[in-house]
Length: 502
Image (tube, rainbow, N blue to C red; front, side, top):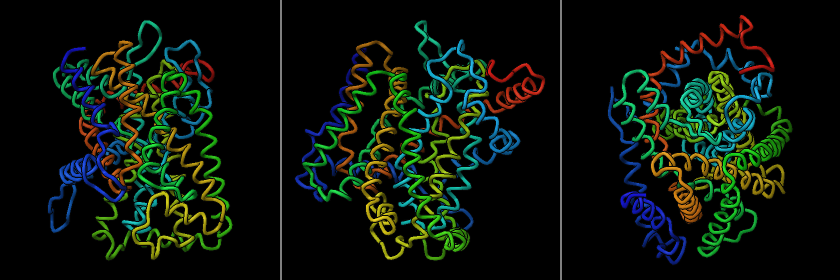
């Protein structure tokens, strides 16, 4: 490792070290934490800067994220809807080829990616969106989630097509590789290098999985009422140690855990939500009416309709991760020789994550009415109040679910961040050991920051990551459309058959 790379690694480790924290209490924002908060706020002001367009306050970065979701949905002929049934058949193994390159099954790849997207954004993010933008933010989250399916399809197809299969059978993939190699194949080698390295360098800070740590801790304190600066640091250290146990085993270990954890945590959470929704079935039409009315006529809330759309977009991006390219690293490890089939599996993620689970969370919050008169209460606390108002003991279940949601996200991002680190610093044993130490240490301060601070930080980092990734997807969209046409033709003519190659 060069001196430059060595000092970058050391700086990352030092930046996240709890020893640097000088705040004596959670309310003291001085010292290291105060310095970090200043950085977070400064980054937010740059990324989400506003411009006045035709009398409306517009955030260019939000348009940048939303445009490809809509444009690619139209360009690919609504692949998000027409290929949904086919995606389910591929995910359950109907086209599985055990001899194909890859490290995990397509279902395991989906589970790993879902564990990164089905997380605390579904519990805390929805509540935060409603707290800030009212129930109407839910409507725009659903619309964005549906369109996000097409963007997720595109990037995950590229992730498999341009992955690197090493001699030992392990796989490396992600935007770093398909931007660099895919654009080089089209004769744009320099552009590919610039975009690939830009993505990697912008994505590296996202290894700070502070949002997940923060909301796991909040969910636990809601039921235990044990909260202090000391407990925050102790919790961070314990979670870091648990994370280290899993990520040391690589993608096979992570996939093994997430394949069991994701269905279980989703079942627990959805079951509880259904109990409340079905128990108030007579209030369901009014709840939907409130959501739609808030989306179309949000007077006095977050700057009107445009403000609510922006809030819905921000939370949907954090929830689905479409356009960020992160999930492509998990899908690149799938056992398949047909990139299109894995892209179709991937399009299921935003539907499960945002359209189903986020909507159920929103309905519980709206039906119970806890969002009214709850100024200053958001995140897991608001969701726990909604569920707890009907099921008194549910905050305990939510604490367990929040832990599983958050922990699964942390370990999935442990894999994603490892691939980014590998691309920048190399994949030697010593380099990857350094990475795992940095990653596990970096999550420790998450419990100390406030909900608003962690979501501001992660939203800013995520939107920055998407800039080079979306540029590359636009450039390779014609290639993807041609590949989709070819794959569908081979399916129709029987060249790709069930329980054969996919």
